[in-house]
Image 1 (spheres, rainbow, N blue to C red):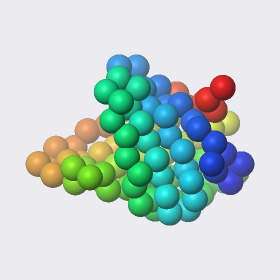
Image 2: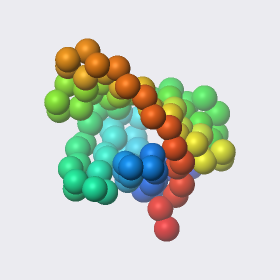
Image 3: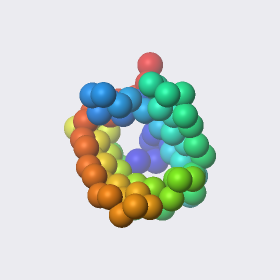
Image 4: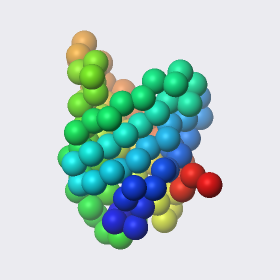
Length: 98
């Protein structure tokens, strides 16, 4: 995943689309296309190979998010839990923003 560090990736989950930037092994930025909401969050990242990683971060509203991303296959999978203990998941596509 080192090859895309600092680049903007677009994660398209159908009704939700986000731009994300992995700034480093510990910093992560995301922006929601629909609402304009954005955050800089502290990241935990596990590189699986050159094209895939497992990411985890806590959002300001206490939602904990995990994202498995494979840039070669173009897939992204999210599992999250919010402060009310609601667990959800969704998946979609990821690509380098042009």
